[in-house]
Length: 635
Image 1 (tube, rainbow, N blue to C red):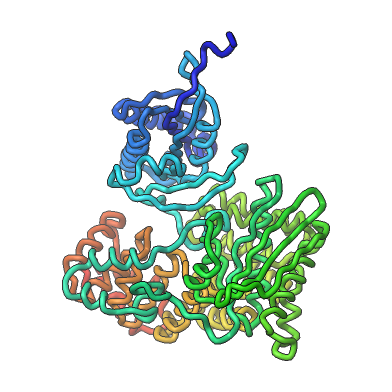
Image 2 (spheres, helix red, strand yellow):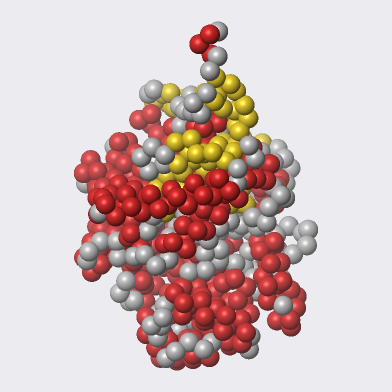
């Protein structure tokens, strides 16, 4: 045992950090990046020492530190991010150095020279990779030690399979100032635990508002006044009259944890296929993926999502074999409607999807006479014959939904590889339109106008290749609405999308916003509430759009409730929130939000932003302009 004399095992809190986009920064200016890195590391060292920790390593762009206390490690991490955030404020966005930090409590092997090894260190490094730029993630073991011992808030983002770690890791995100990235739609792995705690959020809104308006808002219940908010202990949602179903994320039984994305894709395919049957009510994937990795009961899922049936199952992909098991449960009785298993080759991926879909439809008694032939054909179409192209498409989705400049480039490249392997793969062109759209929106490429042109070209190509895919029409509608502000053309595309897939929740939201800007705000609200019903655990951008539509409809109380629920109060959200406060006579609140806007945009112009919204009617543009001005914002 002499070779182990210089080692000892102990339980420790490990902090692991690295720089997001470090290669890009080095490529732009090596000297400036090295100088900035050294300045940032000085901040790390100071905070680590203050919190009784020890720096173990600083290889490349990383920082590895060890602490005796998890509380000290987490406080150190958040203080570092706060100070780094202040340092970045005066820098151009492309020169900001944003660190991701992971904190874990685990067993480590420590040598006499101070080096540490073991799974405890590896998990910390994996947590760091899951953190957003400027953010902090904790393991479940670390969270247990800090919960209730600090003033920090934490979001449970579920269990994650991580490289070279045998068991899934529970992950918690520290609520710090969010990175300035959009939160339009999360990818499947990131959807795992983004449950919207709407009742708690509503309570916080009411406390924050205070006074008479808070009391008025507290009296309102139901989706018409505060989408997604339930009151009391009663079920939030009642099942609709038509057969309703939630497809829980299938479990990955493969020995290779990397197959998780494949299993998530299978779940998405089942949901997409079922959604196209107009006689079914199908909960959106975003809502069901919040249950991923959780031990939940079928009746709980059915009650929370307002459905009668729940499908659950597993997928095992080993070599060239694909094994799928599934069971459909009636939540009212707890009885199995049916259970099926499939054993096929991986080349039969879509065939298994089709068999399972048809079995579900038959099991729910949606008989052939009630289904149009076109619906059945849409549900059983293959998006591509090439599984390799499909893999690149899924990889593109994974990159695109991280919403960074670097990842968006990787997304474009992945979609292009997919279309290269299958030039008729419509969904890949739709994904390409998605990536070009974000290049345009955030000016991630030198020519935004070129990005807009490429987005339209890709979206039209997708529609031409597969005019029966609702997603293709939805994205073309988004481009018409957001890029060229052709609302009538956008409305036509949204209508086609819903005709093809009446369960496409996201389309209802974008359709509602386009209706509002076209002068039909009340219709827009009705449309959005349909989307909320299909996707009860929606993400921030739903509240964002709903708040703007409520304001446009002169329903300021509802606008305030919706906008206050947005976690990342971006500038557009703040503009509508300030105007809503002003219209509601809440001058103090309006002026406070206006001050935040002016701090971020010293040259702010109410007239410019009123025109930028692209309202069809002058009366709606004036209504927005007057609200901004009433909040104390300059013309």
